[in-house]
Length: 124
Image (cartoon, rainbow, N blue to C red; front, side, top):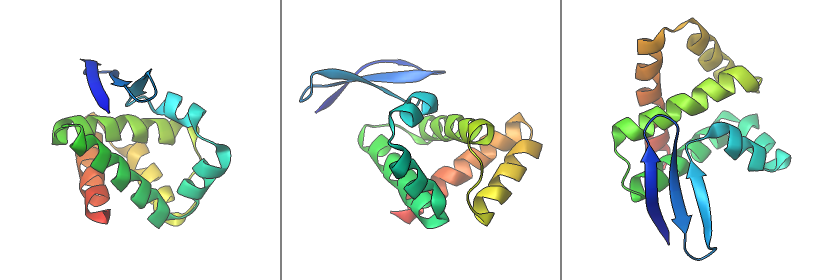
């Protein structure tokens, strides 16, 4: 069972996993990517449908933890910022999203993050 320990609304949220007796830091894409197996990351990124499924699962987990749309969108924006800076698009859909992200201003990116959460939420 996860317990919310504290939340820094701009950076990360800290949960305590009682079963594993460890802290989990959510919403930090760099740490999540660093912990993820390269094969798993490639499996997620290779096909747009698997990418949407992964995002949908993350949105669903966030909803179960009680995160609202705004918090989910902030998390999606951080993930999108990370992907735009550190990952090459693996397919046409990701390429379009990447190009749109790079030309969008801050407000447009926030709107895109909301749309990504909706898209991911519909996937599951």
